[in-house]
Length: 464
Ligand code: URP
Ligand code: ZN
Ligand code: ZN
Image (cartoon, rainbow, N blue to C red; front, side, top):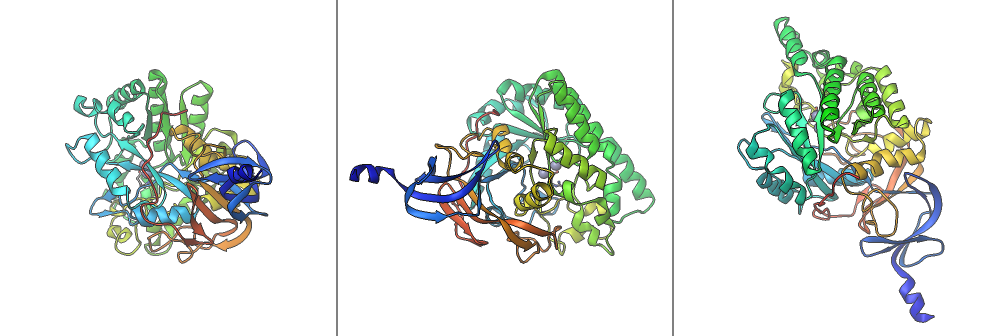
C-alpha cells in the first residue's frame, strides 16, 4: 500500500479546475511528472498541489505568428526574444513561432542555426521557426528537405514588399518544392501591383498621412492575392496557410477553396477582429500606431472574420506581433506614411481578448476558443499532441484562467516592450492567473516567475 501511494504521488497536481480542450469541457485533476502531464482523473495526490476551483485550465496557447527583434529598414521590432516571450507567457502563451530571414546570399541552414541560437538562452517560452523564402533559385530550394529534418517544417512567402515578393511562377515553383518535401507554405497575400499603383498616385498628390497606408492597400488587393495563391495551391496540391487574413473577401475566398477540397487553412489576428481603419485617422500623427499590413478594415470585415472563425472558414488566431515604439520608430514616417514601420503589438492580450469578445459575447464556444488559440496551431504546425492538448504524455503547458477576473488593458498592465498598446481601455472579464511551461510555473498573478532560457527550440513535425 505504502509503495503504491508513493508511485501514485505526482510532482504536481492541479486540483479541481474545469479543463477546456478543443473537444470538451469537464472537471478533473491533472497530475504532472517532470515536464509532462502524467494523468487526468479524480482525486490525484501530489507533492505540490495547486487549487484551481473556479478556474478554467487550458493547454498553453500557441502563437503561430510573431516577429521578435525583426529588422525592418533602419530599425527593428522593439520586443526582443526575452521581453516578447515573457509578455507571451504573461498572456497565457507557452509556444511562439517566429521567422528566419536569411541575409542576402546566406544559406538557409546557416540562417536557421543563427536564429535558433539567438532564441535559445533568451526565450521564456518554447519556440519554433518558419523559414522565409524570397527566391526560387535552385541553390536555395535544395536546402528545403534538410530544414524539415531540423524541425523547420513551414516556409513563409510574400507576394508584396520589395526584396521579398515572389512572382507567380516563383511562388508556384516554391509550392511544388515544399509540397514534395512534406512542408507547409505560408503566404502574405497582397497584390503588389495595386499597392504600387496607389502609392504612386498618393505620392503625386502629396497625400502622406497614416490613413493613406490603408487606402493604398484596399480589400481587393488582399482578396485577389489570396484567391491567386489558393488557385496555385490547388493546382499543385500543396498545403497552404494564409497568414493575417483581414477582409471578408479573403475569408470568402478561403471558404470556397476549402469547400472545393483545397488543402488550405487561414489565420486572422485580434487587430482584424477588434479594430477598424478609423483608427488611422486619429488626430495628429496618432494613426501611425495602427499602421500594419494588411491594414485595419471595416466593422463588416470584423464581423465576417468572427463568423469565419466560428464556422471553420478560418482555423487560427495568431498575433503577427511586430511592435514599434510610437516615439523613435513609428515617427520615422511622420512626413510620409510609406516610412512608418508596419506592425502592431499584441502578443500578450490574444487569449483574453478572444475570451471577452469571442466567448463572452457568444461568438465562439469555449472549446472553439481553445481550438483556434492552441490546438489548431499545434496541429497545423506539427506540434500536436505534444502541444495544444491536455492528455497524458503531452507537455505540461497549462494556463489557469480566471473567467471572472476583471482587467482594463493598458500599457502599464502589459509586459510588452513598446510604448503603447492599441487595445488601451479595452475592458475584459477573464484573464490568465497562472502559466506553466513544461510543469514549471512561469507566471503567477501577472508576475513573471520564469527565466530567460526556459524556452526551448521545438523540432516540429509535418502538419497533421
Ligand atoms: O505589418 C506587419 N504585419 N508587419 C509584420 C510583417 C508581416 O507582414 O507580417
Ligand atoms: Zn505579413
Ligand atoms: Zn507577420
